[in-house]
Image (cartoon, rainbow, N blue to C red; front, side, top):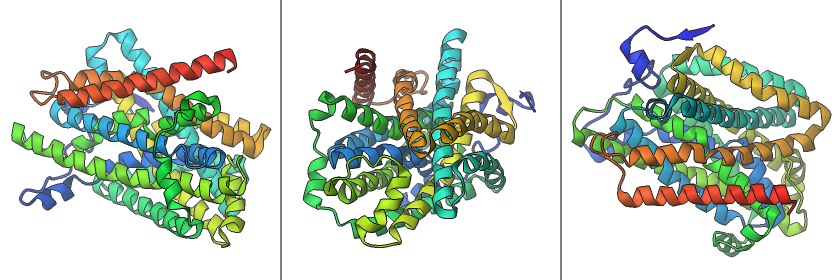
Length: 441
C-alpha cells in the first residue's frame, strides 16, 4: 500500500515531485507573468472558507452580531502575512515547511511537529466531513451518518483531478469558489444588512477578550482562518511553477505568487465576512442568538430573508465548500507525510487513512448526539486548529528570516517581526483559553 520512495533524486528532495515545476511561467508583460502564477493562492484560500469557518462564523454572528468581524479581518491580515512567508520559503528556499523542519530539527522534535501537523489535518478533514454530510442531508435528505461515510468516496474525485494536471485542478477549485461567491451575493442581497453597523464591526472591541464565550469563538475563527496545514501546503504548491534559476527570476516569482495569494485571501475575507454578516443580519437582529447549527440556519434563512431559495442556495455553497476543501486536505496530507518522514504513499491510501480517522468521531457524534453534536464538533475542530498554529508558525518565521536558508532572499525585517507578533498573539490567546477552561471561567 505504501513504501519509501527511492525512484529518483527528485522524489527524495522535491515537494509534490509528480507536479514539481510542471507549470510553465510566462515572460513579457506584468499581466502575463501574473496569470501564470495565479492558482496556488486559490487552493490555499479554499482552506480559509471551508465548512469549519461556516460553523464559527454562524455561531459568532448570531450570538454577538457584527462584533467578531474584527476577528475575521484580523485573521485575514495574519493569513496574508503568513502565506507570503510560505511563498518565499518555497521559491527562495526551494523546499516546503515540512522538509525544512525535518532537516533542521532533531528527530524527536521533527516527529512531534509532524504529529501536530497531522492532528491539524485531521481536524480540518473532520470539518469537511461534517460540512459535506450536512450539505447532502439538506439538499437530498440523506441521513447524516450515511453522508459522513460517503465522504470517503471523494478520493476518486481527487485522483481524477490530479490525473488531469495541476493547472486543471486549480481551474476546478477556482470554479467551485466562484459558485460559493455567487451564492453569497444572492444571500446578501436579500439579507440587506445595515452597512454602517457592518463597518463598525470591523473595529476591535475589548469585550472579545473579557467574555470567555466570545473568546472561544474568536479563537475558533482564527483557527478556521489561519489554518496550520495551509502553511505546509502553500510552501509546496508554489513550487509547481517552473521558475528560472537567477535571483532576479526568484524575486519576481515571489512578487507574483504573493500577489496571487493576497488577492485570493482577500476573496476569502469576503466569503467569511458574508457568512458572519448573514448570521448577524438574519438572526441576531431578530433575537435569534443561538443559531450555531448549519441545519438551523438552513431552515431559518428562508423565513428570515423572505425567499424560499435562501436555504437551498446556502446548502449548495456549503457543498461546493466541502468538495473544494477535500483537494487541499489531500495535498496537505501528502506534503506533510513526505516532508517530515520521507514516506511516499499512494494518494488513494493516504486519503482514505486521513478521512477514515476523521470519519470515526463524526459518525459517533452524529449517531449519539445528532445535529447539535455535529455543530459543536465543528467549532471544537477549529479551536483545535488554533491550538496547533504556533507549531507551524514559529518554524516558518525562523526559517524565512535565515538568509542562508533562503539563498540570499530572506524575509524583510518588518515582515519577520510582524509574523513574530502574530505568533505571540495566538500563543497568548491560546493560553488564555486554556486558563479559562481549566479554571471554569
